[in-house]
Each structure stands twice: as structure tokens, then as C-alpha cells.
Length: 334
Ligand code: GTR
Image 1 (cartoon, rainbow, N blue to C red):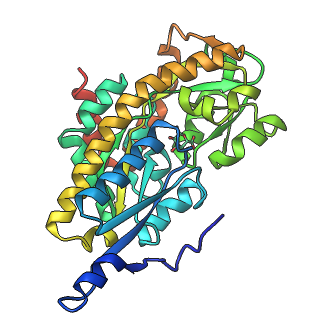
Image 2: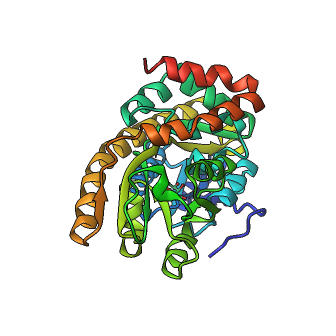
């Protein structure tokens, strides 16, 4: 179901019960109906956290804001949903920073392979002053980032052999998210990248349009990709933050008190998501192992890292204004 993007269905519902009792005294209380986008199923850590966010917002604003989450990307694929939130056609979403790069160039810093050493480093850095700089860049494009979710580390998976060195990527057709940086990343490893919507990957693996893709354990498992691509190799080349983002237009309609309530709810949701994430990684790992997936440890990631240097060089040459973000993130992990 693809809802109309441009016509925002911002129904102002009168709350009948209140209206009837105070009809003579005041105008009816109005509730803002907020629509939110989620790419994952409701049971995924992000889906659960978004549901908690919706509930907490409704509670804390005494029903003045009533968010509803639409799961499983029923409102469109990620690049499309980003535009919908930017224009205010949707009110909130959980977005991965990968497909954000083409719209908010600063976020491409987060997509430089191996920029974060661990998910813990990523959380620490995004929760501090550096994270605020990314939030400022997003705000310039009408996206108010209220908190950061985790998405673990992304690794390569494919249909017919383990990837131990970049040579094993030679000639592989690998699906990537919509971002030129990832095309370069796979090119540098010797493969052929195919940018494609998440929803199309399963079928494309099945029919041989692609040989593999890359993602974290929970997505590899919940999408069913593990049923077709049985070799999961722990390259851990990307550690991407995700935002809980609200449309600027929806944000600006809130008074200070309600903005505070929504921000708190988003921070609570991030705490919950990060906790659920850890459990979900273990569960998904076990589930794919039980389904006879071959998990391949990549003992020496340095060969992959070395291949990424030209990407850093070209990026800094093209965006000298973003060099300090890159070096500040690196310095924060010394
Ligand atoms: C997931 C991420 C999604 C989406 C997906 C993909 O890990 O949570 O937002 O970016 O990967 O590969 O498209």
C-alpha cells in the first residue's frame, strides 16, 4: 500500500468525549494524528521501540499527539520515505544513515567504511557533540533527529563461498543501499555493486540477479536473505547509526512542552532499541546457524581496510569541508 505522498492526511480529530463535556465552555481538544515509517517488521527491535515511542508520546502529551507506526515499509522504500518526512507528508521515521548520504552529504562521513571501530564507539560519539553536528546537518534538510538507534555492524553475505579476503569478492554482484559510496566500496573490493531497495533483495538473490548483499545479523535473518545466501562473512565494514527523525513541519507545530515530551520519548525509545538490539543479534545469529548458514570469521580485516583508502582520499578531496568531521571521529577513537 503506497499512500499518497503529497496530500498529507493530517486529520484533526475532535475528541468526542471531551468535546461533549466541555462543549459549552471551550472549543474541542484536537489531536494531531502522526504517521510514522518503519522499514522493519513490528517485532524487530526498531519496530518495538517505535511502538513504545508512539505510546509514550500519546501519554506525555495527554493525547494531543497520537503517533501511529506503519511497519514493513508499507509507506514506501527508504529513499522515498526520507523525502516524505522532509516534505512533512509523513511525521516521523527511523532512518538508517546509509541512504541519507545523497540528501545530507555530511552523513556520508558515517558511511565511510570502518570509520567506527565498534558499535560502542559509534554510540558514544553520536551521543556527544559530534552527533549534534550530524543532527544540525539533518535539520537543514527538514529532518529533526531526536535520538540515535544502533544497527550493529554490517557484513557481506553471498550464495556460494565464504569471503575471507577482498579477492573472494572478485566478480560478485552485491546489492548495496542507495548511495554511491557503497558502489565505490564494492568496486574497490573487486565486486560489482547493484544499488537496490531492501524490499527487492530477497527475490533478486533467489533469481540470481545478485550473488550477495551486506547487512547486520537481525536484518539478514528477518528479511529471510539467509535462506538463499548461506555464507555470512564477518567483514563488519559498516557501523551505521540510525535516527529517530521527526518532520520539521510537524516539530514546529508543537509547543515547547510537547516538544520536550516528544524528545524524551525518542530518547527512551533509543535506550530500549539499543538494549533489544543486543538480544536480537544473538537470537538472529542462532537462528541462521540453525538454518545451516556458514558463518565465516574474517580474522584479518586489514586487507579490506587497506582497500578503502582511495575512498577516504577521494571523499576528502571532494568535500574538504567535511574533513574535520572525519578526523574528529577518528581522533575520538584513539
Ligand atoms: C537495515 C536498516 C534499514 C535498511 C536496510 C537496508 O539494517 O536498518 O534501515 O537500511 O538495512 O539494507 O536497506
